Image 1 (cartoon, rainbow, N blue to C red):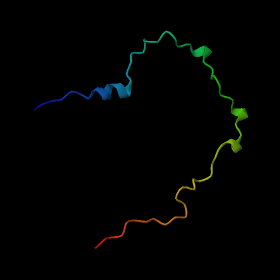
Image 2 (spheres, rainbow, N blue to C red):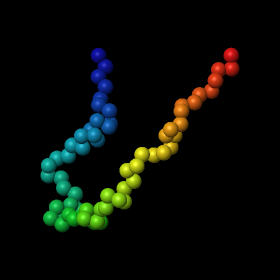
Image 3 (cartoon, rainbow, N blue to C red):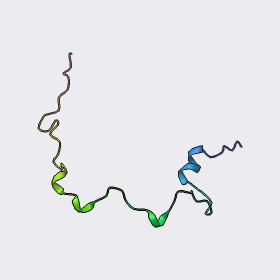
Image 4 (spheres, one colour):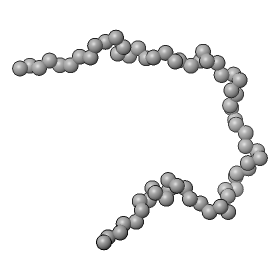
Length: 66
């Protein structure tokens, strides 16, 4: 029986790290969003209309030459 090791991506996907390892630049008390201003978001700025590309056109295909 030939046992293969786990693929490399397996360990990376779970991102398993010991609990006592903390990057130096993490400061949970000072984390604030940079440019998020939800009060200024207006619904009119979003284009929610369906695309008109190929709407109303029948699907066509090449006719057989037989």
